[in-house]
Length: 397
Ligand code: GLY
Image 1 (cartoon, rainbow, N blue to C red):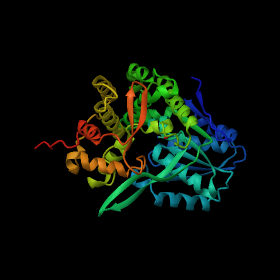
Image 2 (cartoon, helix red, strand yellow; image 1 turned 90 degrees about the vertical axis):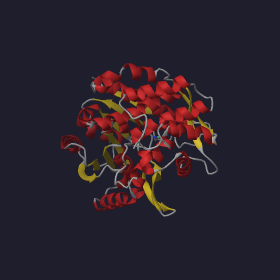
Image 3 (cartoon, rainbow, N blue to C red; image 1 turned 120 degrees about the vertical axis):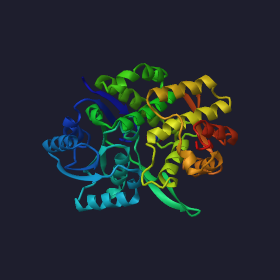
Image 4 (cartoon, helix red, strand yellow; image 1 turned 45 degrees about the vertical axis):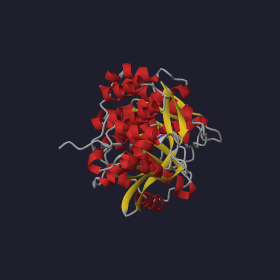
């Protein structure tokens, strides 16, 4: 199977290719060399969960293309997507004397890509980065578009709170290599979590002239669930094409009418779900994966939109059916334990950096393949969105 190449067309020399296909890690070295000709050293930042065989393949390929290679492990948890991890990476890059013309290789899921990307953006005020995503979520979303960063843990009114992606930088990669082979060993729950971002892309794909993406996804779900390589490569390529088109039009998310903000569909709900599951439930790790929280967020956003008359009831059911067919949650039981009702959750949403200073700013669906940004939506509608996914429900005895 020949790989598919999608160009992220950005001005000022910031454009790059995303390559999706099989057996790509074996060509990482030569492709990185072509994307970054002056680099002589490659610093691999890899996910503790990435199988040794993938790391060995990446390393061997880089070495045979003439790079000297160093590597460092990062724990792929939201709590470790932190300023402490960033600091340890920056100290390591300094010790390794990585030059500005050299390259960081992020080999892992979205967390590793984000923190390694931020380290690359900060080291000597910006060195090169090649993203080698190893999860479906990172392939279709996190590795593309140049958003990098870490979470912040703050204490507000005596309670610890996780602010997702509160600190970061836009730093575009020079290349993204999505080797489908690595998905074969991906944990089933993580694989399903990635499908939430694919379903989200289908819900906004009209903005990228691919209105058929949602129905293609629904029709191919069985092949995708079996991880058939050709279908997965097509899925990643189509999803990346949607994201690439949106990012090329609004690289830094400044378009007030939508643009890149559309990619945040469901995310204002999701970030609150992640933050309460990680802290208020007292566990070290969020009880939900990002993609699972996004799945719930997509339903809450659809219900909010239906309360506002933007979509009909059948639309919500369609979204819910797609998510359920992909094995994703459509209702959470975590809220009862956290004793948080819709009003408390709405006030948490206001802490999300994607909200405007003076009110809630939400991306809401407008119909199949279409969404828009809405300023200060009626809070009763948002309340109904939270209720639909279980907030405010009484705990079963
Ligand atoms: N994941 C949203 C974005 O890249 O803009």
